[in-house]
Amino acid sequence: MADVDHQRPRLDRTALEQLLAGLTAVRGGDFSTRLAPAGDPLIDEIAAVFNGMTEQLDQFTAEVTRVAREVGTEGKLGGQAHVPGVSGTWRDLTESVNAMAANLTAQVRNIAQVATAVARGDLTQKIEVDARGEILELKTTINTMLDQLSSFAAEATLLAAQKQDIEAKNAEISQAREETEERARQLALASQYKSQFLANMSHELRTPLNSLLILARLLAQNPGHNLTARQVEYANVIHSAGSDLLQLVNDILDLSKVEAGRMDVHAERFAVRALVEDLQATFGPLTAEKGLEFRASIEASAPAELVTDRQRLRQVLGNLLSNAVKFTERGRVTLRVTASRDEDAAVAFSVTDTGIGIAAENLATIFGAFQQGDGTLSRRYGGTGLGLSIASEVTALLGGRISTDSELGRGSTFTLWLPGSRGSTRCSPPWSAG
Ligand SMILES: Nc1ncnc2c1ncn2[C@@H]1O[C@H](COP(=O)(O)OP(=O)(O)OP(=O)(O)O)[C@@H](O)[C@H]1O
Ligand SMILES: [Mg+2]
Image (tube, rainbow, N blue to C red; front, top):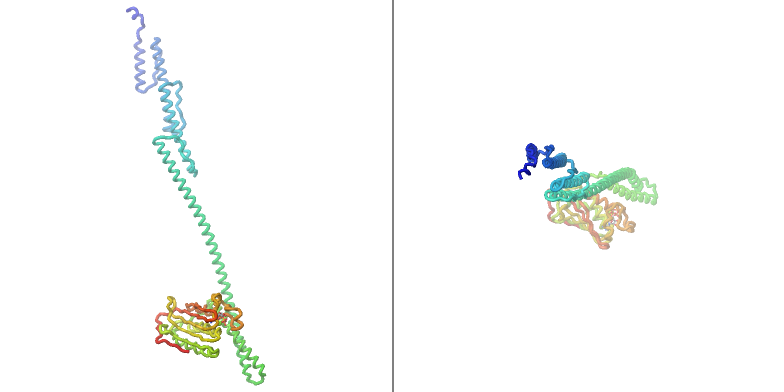
């Protein structure tokens, strides 16, 4: 027995000490130790295994460190650890590291790709990459954010389109308005030129016409007794036709003056009763001549005085009364002054007749210049259809308005509404005549 033991080579103590030092280094994380062969087969084998182990550990450490540095620090994605010839847990470890790196790479790249698309304005992309835990939360957050963004974007696009639409319409409207305004300006100008021309013409016509009238009257008076009866009659015809013509020219002059804005209003304070008596003096004889009754009255509550252009008011009432007389064959013509219950009018002058009346369809047109209720009537009653248009223009100038109420075949009432003036007193007691 002792012999056998004796024959076995003695363990090389130095080699064992070297091995121990190497192992201690490995335990301390240093894989750089390599063992040299010692000549003993067992020790050499141990040294070879130790060396292979430290070699692989070295490589593994280097690779994992590289991948971790690339992915974790340098931001270089896609790196993988390559450790040849590893097996078992070493291989599992390597694969885990690689899987981690690959997952991280895929996730970060997918997020980057979607972010790039968003930056380019493409909101249709989504993060599709497999993820769990916090990365899954990030993925869900980003995808939700993308959904919201794209619905905002859709809304914004819609709003922008609507805004553009509205802007286009506004542009159209303002262009149309400008055109309309331009046309209105031109029209106003044209109508002003026309009115001025008419006003000047009428004025120029009156001077020769007046001397013509004076001369015709002189002729008709036949002061030298050298004209025949027929010649005197002709002179009278010239005078009466000329008078009609003068009336027409005066009417046109009035209308043109109003239209050209050149008719002035001279307001004065006067008694309503004096005006009515004046009208009665003119129209009483006219109605009597036609066999008509004429009545004038002033209601107790009507203002006793008015402040307005007396002459213009008289002109309007004169037009209404002469129409009433002209278009009435029998019955009566009435002028009534009443207090107005209207808010914007203080006094109302109504001219009522029992004449031919006006058809409803003609009521709207009779206030137009040269408009007569019924074309066939003009031959029978004469006139040019200027009276009411002058009346309504002048009334507007006085701040009032005219309303009409008529029944065909029964008669008409034209009412002139005028605004009051402060300090006007009421007429009391009531007054009537006729
Ligand atoms: N009181 C009335 N009764 C019936 N018809 C009327 C009456 N007043 C006016 N009209 C109708 O309204 C038309 C217009 O009246 P307006 O006073 O403007 O013209 P006119 O009397 O025909 O002519 P002018 O007044 O220029 O001599 C008349 O032609 C007539 O058809
Ligand atoms: Mg008339």
